[in-house]
Image (cartoon, rainbow over all chains, first blue to last red; front, side, top):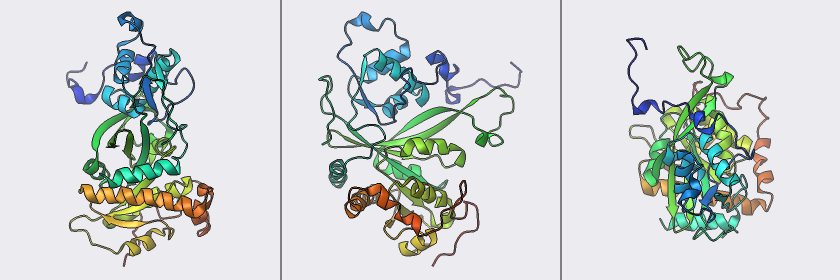
Length: 126
Length: 230
């Protein structure tokens, strides 16, 4: 390293290239790209403490965050992992049956009028 | 409520909605999101496109093929199961790949306008019109900025008469709440007025103006001389 180079601090981001965490994969194994607000939850399939032995620390962390319903954006934000990486890892967990998609509506579909009215009432009650 | 399937492991199904907050650099997008919701960071790692060549300084990182976009989003929980996500759209044109992603299935958008640099929100207005995503224009009343009648702003932006233009103070929760209420009311109203084919009827605004040639904007680009107000 040239003498002029400074040490990087936390703000410089991860030292490991992000897609090293996915084994170089940039696309989810399923081919389906999860929307930012897709709601996911850890499925009840997850059994004893040995169940997650084959998983990477990042997979396990995501699994822990999905004990209750969470969105892909929530998971990416809490783990501070890039969105693309989180999508690949979540798709792995979905493929293994460890995580289930709890979509209130298909990704990309506009919210229904009934849902919009609920949002309106929710906003007014704030 | 929608028909969220429950597999038994979740309690109340969560219904999540996306709202985009667009506008020029410094228009107050982050302030608006932060005034009403818990703000959280989001990172994306995207392939460098031709658009960013010459914009990103690649000196010393010649092999770099991805770029990181850091953005904030707000999470607003209403009641037990409704969550509204507010995404501030990254302003620069080279981040427009994120806009497509963000507007996918979104409830609608708020275009935040700064009357000192009104031209900055032309690209956002054009984008949402083309995508046929319902939007409203919120005019951020900055201290020291000249105050205009929303109708003048509407004319300057060449807005469809049905698109609401409202004054707001992005720093105040109640004002931002009113902006969001106006947006949802607008989305609902355009559906009722247009019947089931909401998207089809919404495109009516396109007919008022010649279709812009591909890859350009009907309005002058940001940075171009501003239209006169008032």
